[in-house]
Amino acid sequence: MKVLKSILCMVLAIVIASCGDNDNSSPNSVNDNSFYSKINGSDYNPEFVNGFITVQGSTISISGSEANGNNVVINFPISANAGDSYTVEGLQLVASYDDSNGDGFISSEGSLTITAHNVEARKVSGTFNFVGEALLAGGTTYTFTEGSFDVTYTSLN
Image (cartoon, rainbow, N blue to C red; front, side, top):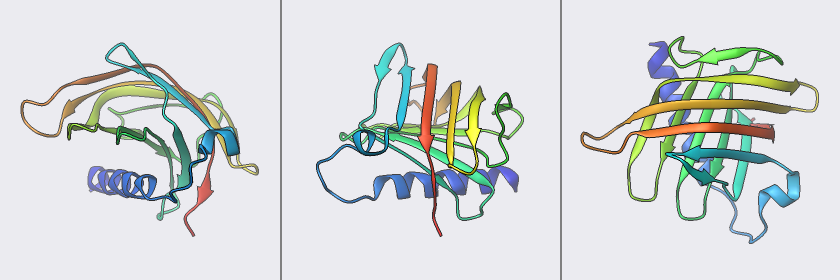
């Protein structure tokens, strides 16, 4: 049941991250959010970086999206403190990727380390890496390395 809740939170995060206004300004230039990773060895620097507390109020979701539809979502406990580490294997971290070709995955292994978390300012930073198998049989396996984020998150309420 815990895995199902995590998957549902991730799907909600993807939907919310995909819905936004159509202004031409980059959220990064407005709120200084940052997100970076290498995906299968190639740089991933999304134009749109968001963070929010899920509807359940127990998870923070960080989303990095490109205009072409590529989207990474990372979910971890809201109780995260600087120095805390979370693993996919321990069901504390759920990461996903959807690309513009229709491929997607949910992480099968990996970790996240929180480097800073200011609860009052709702600002969190961390580093991550993970691997995932494609949701559809025969799809690409994605490997995320050198991942980092520094995001101010909001509440969905």
